[in-house]
Length: 265
Image (cartoon, rainbow, N blue to C red; front, side, top):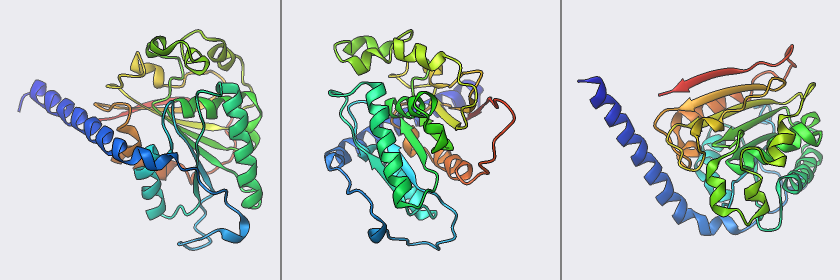
């Protein structure tokens, strides 16, 4: 079998997965508008042993989306022992990135109270990852959130943001925006570790490599998923497996930034 044929077959599979992800998401999307009930200590349910060692996880969706985008990821985590996975819905029409990050901070603090001060992991898709980064990097959230996973997040901006310029939160996604300039400022001492996935077929992160987090003061592992798009990352089997492997890792601080890059075919 020739190399060009193999590449074409892999590309076709990637396009097919993105199409399946879009179809499934459109079916689940209406149900994702309903906000979750806030967890309280007396209503927590654990289907797995109490010593499983899994701290709470908070999911943050992207632009014009809702918590339905995490349906597969959430189920996958639950099956593998994560009982306490929650999601935050927000409106891009009434918020910009700093205000959305402030809202996120309130939810993190609420979860910390419910779970007796346990650290909270954030998983953000698209804009949700940028909001999480702003919270830990600019609002002191690194004291409460030891790790953040981003999926298809425009860390370096995206040219696609030029299509919806009237919305302030969209203008902030353009390369060179004031918000992205803030995130480029020194972040010495930021304790949060990042795991960042990006797909080389992403039509909304332009160029796709802008989904990688490159900052000299931040500890980030960047993983490119070959032949993957924007919506397929939250359902991609290799992505889910890597997230499950990464979440329970030691939270001991590292000496200085630890930035690595890898790819999954």
